Length: 384
Ligand SMILES: NC(=O)C1=CN([C@@H]2O[C@H](COP(=O)(O)OP(=O)(O)OC[C@H]3O[C@@H](n4cnc5c(N)ncnc54)[C@H](OP(=O)(O)O)[C@@H]3O)[C@@H](O)[C@H]2O)C=CC1
Image (cartoon, rainbow, N blue to C red; front, side, top):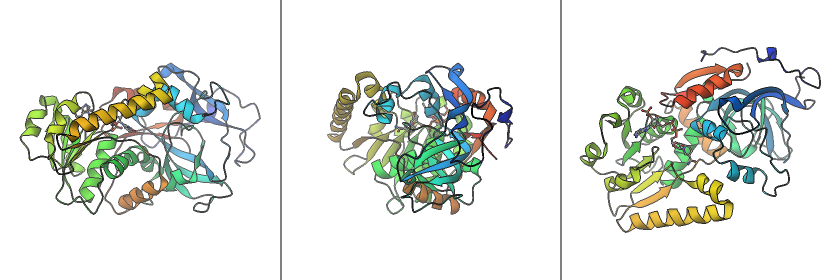
């Protein structure tokens, strides 16, 4: 990656069919973007100057000019086809435009400037600086412009650059949704609570640690030994190295927990619920669920039935042992990002951008994401 550099994507080969790109959104019909036309590896990524320009279809929508786009592990999985059946159904519920998802633009995080507002939009004006997490069923931020509902957008923190701000929304909104909506935690009820984060060094974990510390909780984290200083720097009180051997034993020797946030999945459910305080309302919230795999495999109706059956069976199995089992999800929400902005501007949440790529280097950014073991976020600079 390049630190803060911009590359000249205008030098790319493909000519725009409608002449030079204009500077006002209303007269534009095409824009530069990275798209995929089929699912697959990095070869599927294609740069074009002729991606369809986003259109305001509903009066509550806004068009955002993208300054910086943030990447998440989900982008790599979506490039590979994860969620394809479920998300294209959500994009096109009436199946009006068959095979509607292509060309698909990836990129779930955006920081940029409002260029146009629908007639019902009251809270934003043109030129407002905003950030947002883009729902997976919408076209993403690896493009010059993106259209979003105003209720998915929030004013960007003043204390962050666009580059930093693009590294926050999707992972921080997921952490908030899992801890607050699913876990029932808030700034008013965390003091003295003991929280365990399985997989604390990733995107979601790093924001979860900072939120919980700001709310006064005691935070234990599992991560690699080489991430210990990183998570301690974010506020983690106790760190257990998962690369040194099974973590069940060292964690089992500790005082029990009020909530566990699971970012790892796999066999964690087999042992982690025994680490919770029984009969105290303690919760296990996992973000690693078969939700989209089930709907991809079985279709929406049968997939949702399967999801409901799986989560109900597991919840019941654990409820009889006195603990609650829940699935957490990313939820797009401007109001949640407003709360996160206040924490950022109050110095309670910061972000670590590990790598910055320019717009012409999107395949390199995906290669970096594929390697995993990130110690911070990956951002693509789209415009100055
Ligand atoms: N349900 C939903 O809506 C959402 C689900 N997710 C899921 O949540 C999970 C976390 O997402 P995100 O934070 O963005 O992902 P990241 O890849 O950024 O983070 C994952 C972290 O887990 C660590 N890790 C891997 N294996 C273990 C282990 N056995 N024990 C402890 N730590 C481990 C990795 O660290 P190391 O480098 O040391 O291996 C890495 O830092 C992912 O599985 C993602 O798919 C995310 C967003 C929304």
